[in-house]
Length: 168
Figure 1 (cartoon, rainbow, N blue to C red):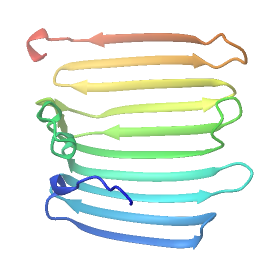
Figure 2: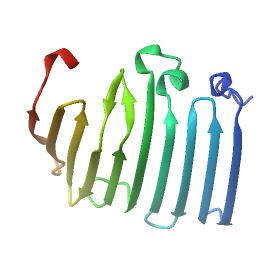
Figure 3: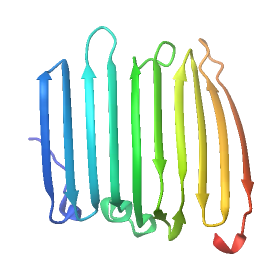
Figure 4: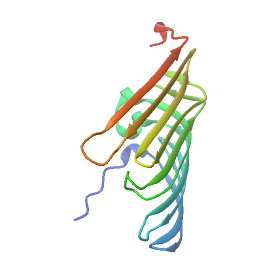
């Protein structure tokens, strides 16, 4: 039969879902209010020769520790994110993903205005991350190239400002 994961860690939950369209061209929304946080998502999908997709999500007070049953991941995450693109093959896809975080906590560390962006286009995946945790600012950028053949190249640059080792 169908094996479904146990969801007891969600606690008392309330779900609202909607679906509009056809199986190969639709929009769907979900709101989940649970004991591990609230998630809102809006998804649009077109399945044809090349997949087209657009999704947006928001979390409020999401606790990864409770969700994944791992106290090392205790958190209170307030996120906004989006994903849009066409295709799934790294050689031809064009996709942008963005996650923003603010007024949150992870590993007991307060997180301020932070962002993570991925951009896949023309056989190249670019990423950029900015994070503000306590008094420290982190910034990282990377480029991953998928040229045809066996050779893959990766570049990573980063900086850390005002690091207080006592915060770690």
